[in-house]
Amino acid sequence: MHWALAGQVPQLAAAVCTPRTTDEVAAVLRVCHDATVPVTAAGGRSGVCGASVPVHGGVVLDLTALAGVVSVDDVSGVVEVLPGTFGPDLERELGTAHGLSVGHFPQSFDIATVGGWVACRGAGQYSTRYGKIEDMVAGLEVVLADGSVIRTGGAPAAAVGPDLTQLFTGSEGTLGIITRVWLRTHPLPPV
Image (cartoon, rainbow, N blue to C red; front, side, top):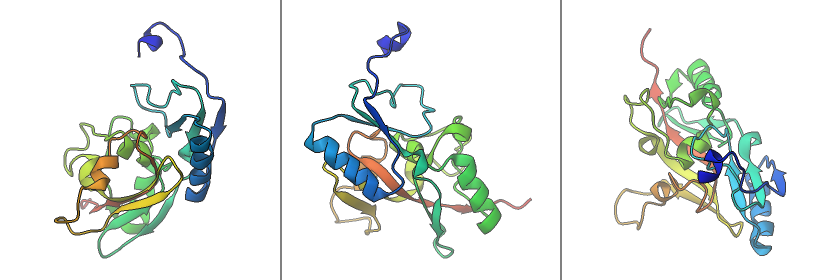
């Protein structure tokens, strides 16, 4: 980030796309892949390392419109959530409607998105009770650079090959764009 210390911006994006569905993310990535245009994923932009700065120009994929809780499994306690969902919105819905919490509270909680937590392997001093985000991720839906969509997780823990969920967790958008997250939740503590 030497450019930031010098007060410079390395490149500006040629375009900003704000997809609302996995299919729209896949379509953008297909076009960019075919035209060899770089893509930079962006969510809450709360990171301090410049990951959402398009250092090579190209397209910025703003994922904040891909937001909301899709479902909560009352038996397993797993929540299906879209990556542009901000932390307070997720916790409010889980707590109010289900008496649950993900229990992940990085310092950037108020301005960070679920996709950012996972893509940047978020942690924080308020996240010690239930572990780091990689301990909470049960599965992912990811769009690869060529526009193909894969889902990870849901398989037994042994003899199924590499753990793709952990491969994408912390990959900062370099291996694919996270479009759906399944997180383990916990009951809210008694008041």
